Image 1 (cartoon, rainbow, N blue to C red):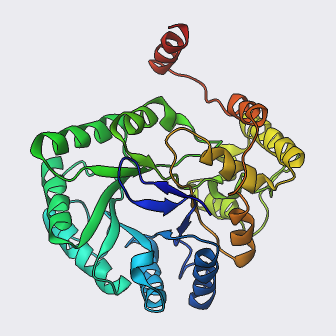
Image 2 (cartoon, rainbow, N blue to C red):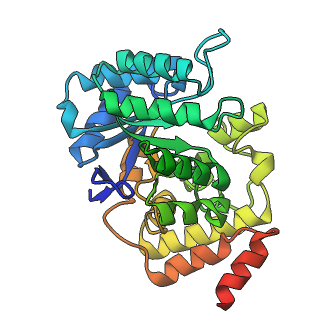
Length: 335
């Protein structure tokens, strides 16, 4: 597996990041440790989790595995923001919650430091200065090496960048957005901010909850039993069948399958490889529930789609442009 620099930093991470969201939820601890062992065996060093994944169980499973590893060989990322209790200060990005959150994550991970500490989403209540100054303190104290962000809009990310620059605080080094062939609207603003400011992009949900895994084909009338899509439909959220069962999705899947057949790869491998070749992307986050899924996802690295194959996928997955982006994009193309 190749390694890439995280944005404008000197930190080198594997071109695929292993997501640990399934640990303790869909995947047992024993199987989680096997998946981690296999990921490291092929050269992976970048692992992402969050305090809220299974309410800390994911971090605990990862922490016990870390005791068998050379800690300094690995880049461990986790997050803070969402509720971890019922108290009034058990959520958000206040100084109090961040400080208690980082200490709790360190205990669960059984480590002295976190390589990448990310805020999980924007906090509309806490002043951004309070959040950023606290994160800066974590870096200077040595508890955290780098800081990042997930699920920000373009203006939110740029404001954070500017505040850090003005105040001399540690800047965000990466953005973790939802990004895949079915979800490309981050390209309208966030990609430009990341490229201009030296922020690495580590996409989550590269297969959009399984829609791009190869399990879904045109003509299906319902999601396969036991899939995340079926569960999301029942819950009315995320990658629900009713949200994606449309011509735009099926056109993308048709093209994805065609390119996969031409390249001799699986649809999942093509979908992830497409991300690896997108501007600014450092490492897509693969979330394997089983060893079989991990092995398939690992096959997305070490090769490249052709220019024609990239163009085919880019064209079919181009999202409908809405104001003002249609004007901005058109002006850029005419220049």
